Every structure is written in structure tokens, then in C-alpha cells.
Image (cartoon, rainbow, N blue to C red; front, top):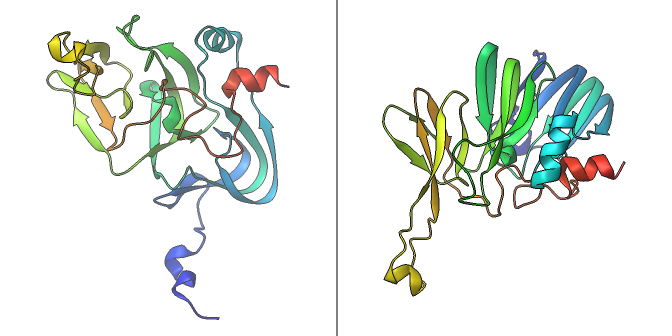
Length: 248
């Protein structure tokens, strides 16, 4: 049998341990233990691997989601074998956190998987207040370990060396030490009253020293960390962490 499909470029990668890129759209985890991934992200696996839907992962996160209706639908994969993760052919990037003072805030829709050595929590975005129902909460990772994040298209990494703003649905992740806020883009006026707006009601502001990663696509939906929305795969739990916790 002959085809470009069987090119070495499409062959399974080998010779690595843990989480690595299979290609630009897929992560391969050479599993010897466990890894945490978004529900529905598994596209294939080999070997002896068991999957377990996670609940809130702690009373603090349970309360946060109960109050906000937001969370990341996660699962634990454990065993020995090869696990392949993807999300609707989104581009995948690996980020290594390298110590207790290394932190990254991530839009929950862009979390594909991470090593269990990392600490994580859902936190309120500073300055969000009650200005918008989008982007009030995000996921903060700290410690030492690897995270796989997704981007819809090729992202831009902005150095925050001057006042920086991004659409809250396009912001993928940013340095955990940055100060964030919400800025009203549409000013109330005659055009707004007549239904003419810029289409950008609110933007997120970033200040301090660090970076912001922005994708060339705006997620559809109300929440940055919602488990339901265009980015969720078919077959995933529609209720996020809270739904998984209460449904089991």
C-alpha cells in the first residue's frame, strides 16, 4: 500500500517520556502514572489506561463554581501507555512552569491537559467587578510541570511594557503577576442608543511586567472558563466540574 498518508511526518513520535507534541494539533502523553486533561480531549490511546471524571478537586473550587456556574470539565487518565489529546484541530503549545514562583493564568477553554504536579485554582480576574458576565474567572497554575494549551490559529505574544488591552474572548493566557482590569470600549452615546456599537463592549486591560498571549479568534459564549461552548468537544460533560461532581 502506498500513500503520502504514510509519510514519516505522520508516524507516531517515539523516544520521549511524559507530555510532548505529536504534531502542531495533537499532544502525545507517554503515560507512566497519571495526567489530567479536559473531558472529551482524548482522540486515541494505546495500552492500559483508565479514565476518571474529576469533581471539583477541592471544596474551594466547588464553592467557586457553585456560585459562578463556571469551571473546567476535567478527567484523570492513569496507567501505562500512550494517550493522544486534541481539541477540534486547534493549534497546541506546551508550556513548562519551572518553580514555586512561576505562575500562568489561562482561559479555561484553552486548557487541554497538564501534569498533576502543578497546583491550580479558579480565581476572579482582578478588576472585573460586575462590568461583564464574561471573563470574571480564570484558571491559575503554579509550581513545576507542563501544561498543554490550545489556540485557534497562530497567536501573538504581547510584551506588557505599556498599557495593553485584549478582547476577553481572545486572550489565551498571561503572566500570573500582571494586574488586570476591564475597560468599557463602547461609550454611551447616541450611536449606542440607536443600536450602533463597535461590537467590543469590554476589553481586558493588563499592566505590570509580563506577557499576554492572544489568539486570532474570539470564543463564542459568555464565560472564559465555561465548560460548555464552541470549544468543547462532542461527548464532553456539558455541566463542567460541578455537573461532573453532582452527577456522580
